[in-house]
Image (tube, rainbow, N blue to C red; front, side):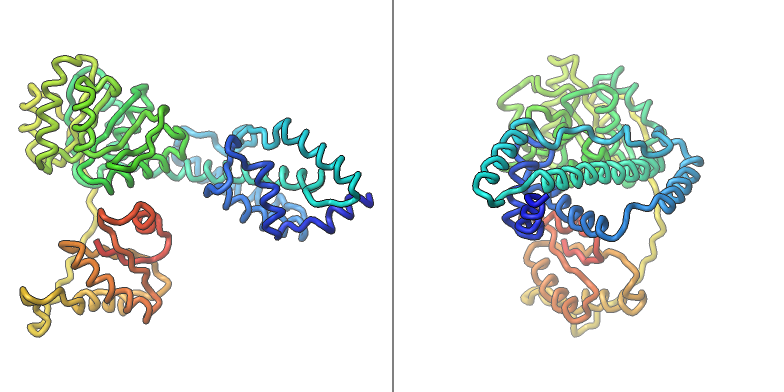
Length: 432
């Protein structure tokens, strides 16, 4: 008992050195959660809340039961193909303390008893951290279960969902399939998932822009709740998350052409998806010509062309009247508000862009909507110089009003800066 008191007096959970010692026990390179990852930071935030919770009271089961009953009632209306409620059997089964760690701790405790001091974690601290980690994993799994139910509902609401089985059947039966769908039907995010879940492996999905490769790869990983793990990745020039276990890869058209130079038969892929073929730029047209020649030598290869509803017959006839599946889009109400630019603010060719018309847009939104209402604003500009000019003015306005987060978005930004735009949860204005 005296040893435990001595350990608890010398052990401080708020001390970074103490937490570093726990990281060496539970969050090593080969553990389920590695030191320095997002999950590692989330655990220590959870640990602080968990410790405060334990000091106040034991967990109450009443409110949780009401929430479970409410969630059960909500799930009665829609069949999502999921269990009706979360069960502890679905939790992640993982050993959070290996045998070599236990032996090292036992040796350390023995040495500490001889020194009559306690510089490292004792058995009670290790047990507390292990208990918190198990609760964190279970809590994360519960959150994932709730997100999965919400995602399944959203996916079933997409227009392309009702064509899921038909798409898989066409791809199995035909070397080339054209999927034509309006913007918002869900083809870019859902078709690769449909093919992956139906048994196709080693799928490549090309995009005309690097930003699209990254954002789509992350979105598909998010929608699958990383159930594919490292099987979903992206690869662009000088950057990528591809691993030997990657089965679905988003990449640029130019990069796929480079791979064809090294491997003319593209033996590494079973399915090729060429998205946004209606844009008709040089890389895309050249790639389609190469792939048409490749199909003659690779009868097992499957090619899916995804396009907006423009020139569908052109692409179908180019690939020997390939079957076309048309998917309706999803329309949203749009209101056009025109704000004329005064004559004195009309830019001349020698002057740089005047930011005042764009600032009036922000002012109009602030006057029309209350501060607590969230929303987003996209400003489309013609180049990096114009983006920088408007960005500087909008950031000064945002500093004054404290109602906006203004972020740039263009291809020369780092991935970290692009992620700020893609996943910011606060209200922001984006210039791009």
